[in-house]
Length: 88
Image (cartoon, rainbow, N blue to C red; front, side, top):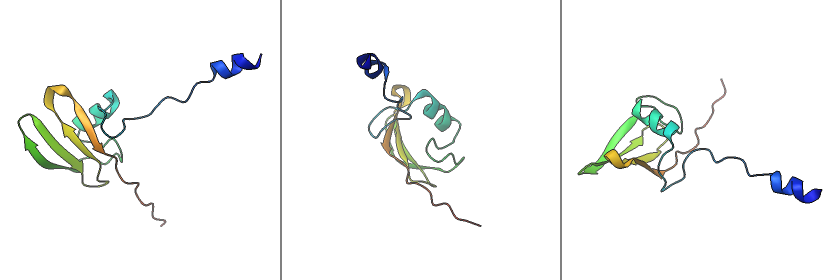
C-alpha cells in the first residue's frame, strides 16, 4: 500500500554538527588529533580568545571556528567556507 512506503522512507541521517551544536564524536576525534573536521587540513588551528576553561580556536585554512569548553565538550561557532578547487 502507498502509506507503507511513505511511512518507511526516512530523511537521510544528518552529517556533522550545525552552528551552535556540540561536535559529533567523529568531529571531536578530528580536532583532538589537530585536524579540521570541515576541510581536513592538519595543524592549521589558530588559538583565539580564551578564559577559564573555554578556548576559542579556528582553522587557518577554511575559517571554521570552535569553542573548546574542556570537560563540557566542543561547540561549533561557524562552518568553514568551501575551498576553491584550482585546475592544474
